[in-house]
Length: 468
Image (cartoon, rainbow, N blue to C red; front, side):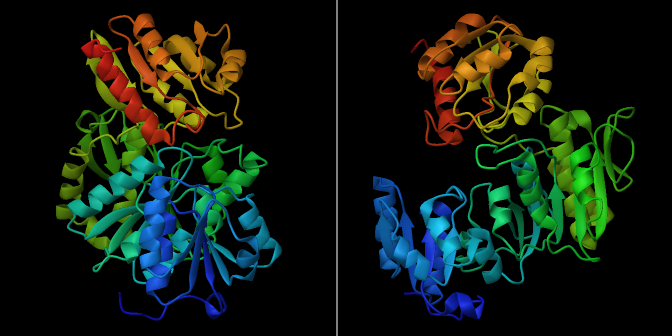
């Protein structure tokens, strides 16, 4: 058993048991960290599965009390603190009970930050681009010789890093709106807001509610704070115009601000220094230029040592070696003259618009999954410009068909992904693109967007091998 240390928690949070709701990876890490710190921990998940049973067995070895298949609401009401896993909706009975009982609810991120008080971190949020920007930020910090990691919504729980024998010195921390809602101590070395558009309207009553949670990244803003924001996004500029601290901005539309794409010279310019030519950045689309500018500006703003001539040269070289993330405009391969692209991570309309704008060839677009409350009509201009056809599938298929009918040839299918891929092969012509960019969550047919993307890639390879 690990040695017991004094937990860096508020005294009132330690007066009785702490409840952890949701036992995916972040819930497991948070429960383990709190138990090793000497806290009494009750952890529960409404689901049951072999994977959760395995996790429960591990947690019981860590002296955590575990319940699967439901939650003990009376026990949660008596807790001194509730820790929320990001995948658990805020309106589930466990959280409703906690709020009614006056129990504080915090995110797994909040626990991680409290156990890593000396951590230097760059916080990244926004509707789209935050995962790529987070990965780029971590990549640049590592290239500069920092002991750095990526964490948060990108996949690795911050509490998991806190459990490491030697935690990282720097973290690129991706924060979702749900995580920000419950992270009162967020106070990054640099905070990045990539962009804003309607999203998660299945969990928020309005766009304003969603934007309000994004704005919570600035809740502890002070004159010494540093922020990186998108000069091309009016919504971003509106919610940050009165935020305390130094604001730096990036743009792909104007030759202005602290970081921009100089279209005349074809160079990415940051803090007055040309870094690399656009063609040296191995990522498709202007949105990825924006991500690269945001990450570079954040890293260079985070420490004066990152702005020396040697550091700038290192950053420039690192930008040229960054690879596209899996499931985010990821090239699967060119098969019989058709380029297959996996953009399964695009789970909202705005993200799919960005993906479509990055296409330079006629595109067969695969749209579908579980509806998130947004209209699909915003896709019409991009479909007119580049669309060969749309295949609408899954639970959202009828809504997609209603919104896009007549804009481009459209076929609605059911919930057989094999049929979707077979039809895409039939519709695509040599020189075309088949783009999986669903604009929906995956939960009607898959466990998550990663599984959806993996199946897409497997089926694309199967098409090539004649296995469908």
